[in-house]
Image (cartoon, rainbow, N blue to C red; front, side, top):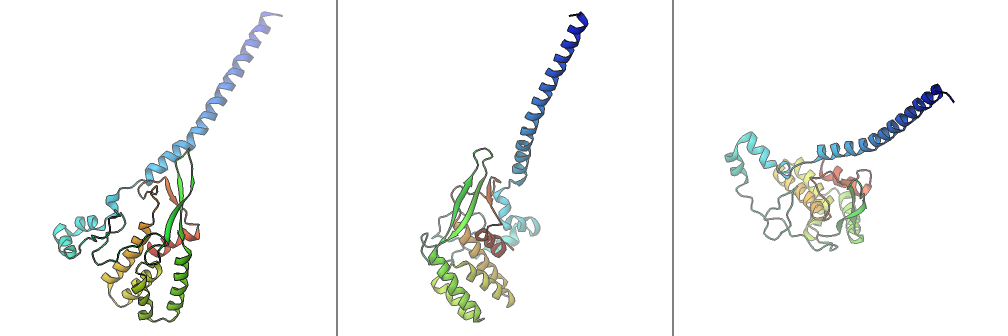
Length: 224
């Protein structure tokens, strides 16, 4: 065995070690890239609750005095202690019943999956059998095309979501925009009272999958 052979063996070994090191580094970089991309997307989708209050934007555009004058007659709902982000319950809104009661409940949010690695949690709305029975009644009333018949649903079931949204559309066609906004806001409020304790509107780790039919109504009906 010559010195030349030893040198060639040493070079070959060095090349193999270098190739192994580069492969290890590439693998580590590839595994880190998705985590970095996820962290970047979570940060991008993070938001502040201040941005959910339309009065903040109105104050910026029109001034605090005008907004104060427009909202001076709106009193907070003292019978609702739940802190909400999307809506501000007014004093003339009816209270929400206990979960499962047809007067105000029947709509809940369920945690359907959670990832320990990314921290992402997926949720879905659930509707009780009693609520679905109300939905069937609502469909019958809508087919009458009589606004009074539809509005009658709210006398007994004041937070039936589709009835609230339908009344909002009816009010808009009659130019009653303030009342229409109130009906729509009550529908969004009903959804918000059903939020799961671990669901967050401000952190992107909470996901509400639009492809699920039970979730789609929240987007298409309440947030057009």
